[in-house]
Image (cartoon, rainbow, N blue to C red):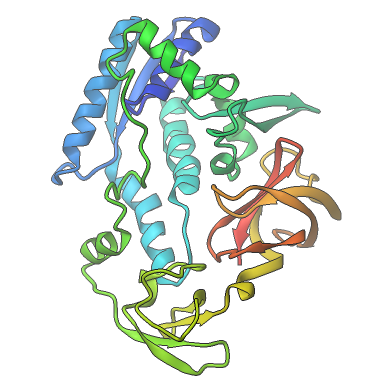
Length: 350
């Protein structure tokens, strides 16, 4: 059967195309999603991405097409992102995009058009064990993306193919250079793709037609310490940019969206040994988190995983008990649970 290659226009998915051609054969088709509103200035980036991806596909002698996916991307990812921030939580749109778009919308497209595997440029590996497909960390630890794939389902993993999992970023660029790809030296994206300047407050204000409302900074006892610009302008663990002085370093401990309050306190109050999660996803083995399970867990993409024990508390809920306190677990972020370098579960921090 033919295979579909998700091509962003960047160097990673281009190298993935080359490697997939060597491993899966030449019955391939590249597909680039246009994720910006076609009436917005950002649509120019989509046009460039499509052109670069088409150039790479032509270089390798495979078909290429594109799909305008902004309506679904907006509904499934952008709406989630803004809704979570406005509710006082900290979203991770990349996790949701992988589940809903790259292996959701694309899976639907693949099934409709008779494609088997979905090939992407993610830095992760897949291994088979006991009849299940598991996500394994990439060889290049600095680029590993197992965290953002942890909410995929077993059906989605069975259809996935990650050629870059065994390669370093330097090796990937060497492949692109050797092939003469137009994007061989293209810089990696560092920000949320739909907020390239990183100003999420401006983005939410413009997309929702609203402005942040000033409210109270309070301490943990409810004492008013000053005024903030709007609860969704701040993140848990933040110290700089608060615009308040209390005679010592002070940090955002939590947010109360209903009352538009930002709770401040000392840094040691950010340290937590136990973290509750719900919406637990078991991407591979449905029994992997039954009972009390020794594991390693990480609380955000850039967090280094730490020793812990997972305690199941319900059908889709549990508590991660860390050996050592962890800094600033943020409601809405994803906790990902590992056994060695294998993802065994994930959930949303409460």
